[in-house]
Length: 390
Image (tube, rainbow, N blue to C red; front, side, top):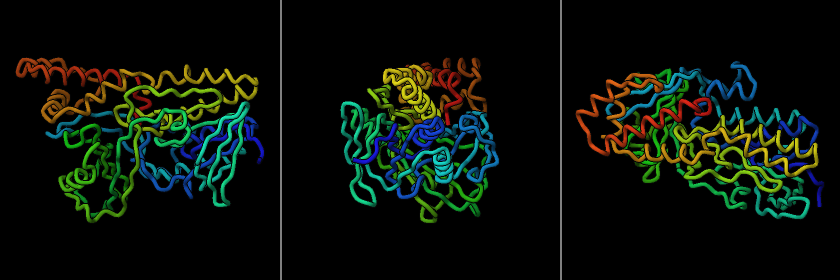
């Protein structure tokens, strides 16, 4: 049996690297096991983060992995109406971002082990045994504490019975040169359409390239290519295809177990409306690391119970905050367009009473009224938790 580590972290993405950095900085031994050969690759993220996310990791904007600054985001509906979310952010090179966080963890003393595929998790009385396939062959990793940060399909979350539902998604990247001028947007575009029931499509202008992606439950490739054509893009001219699973929660996941914590996508830290997960990952990873440090310093494993309380403000911990956006994503175009007509060209936080009354009096249909009610409920939820949105 090899050495016993203080902590094994499964997953070398933003959540795992952030947790490992915090733990290693306090002088405890921590190893990160990541199944990828190269941290961050392949990418399966839309690659947008907010200024709040940068503040969370404590860096300035002059970073090589920032490729473009944006003014915020906007929702675009089938009738071309728009709602604005003015919150400064950035398009990033996600693989480079992941490696930046991994390098910080390593600089603080964490060990990063790539090409390590977890095969089995075995609990023992005072430790965990993680059996993994590595380039050197099968190896066992022993630890006092365990963190699951392996994304939507994290083996630790699966072992604990907390596997979320999955929303398939992927994106095409196109060279920006020669694409339609209207795609050169200073906002991240989120397109809501009945074609993408359960999800949405997005367009991110990244400077030299444009990402066009979507997440939905059925016929994803067909619907995405149809969307590209509507934008004036030839799917056959894409320069890259990326994608992966997005956690899609209908209930809050259990995230605290005896000597185990789940963070990032593995813990369901996905913003319910935008499906953005990077900020939730680095935030929950930091807190998971701090809680485990406290447990190690006090030799009190019950200190882990603080984790659930400390992350309770995140929307994924609120069942209603999960369910209301799901209702929104199931609307047909008539309801989506009505919400767009009421809110067109307005900031999301505005409450246009006159516009609401006009549509209420003109079309007092129960399903339209339900759609408006859900739309304004989503607005209120977003207003309270916007810093985590992306």
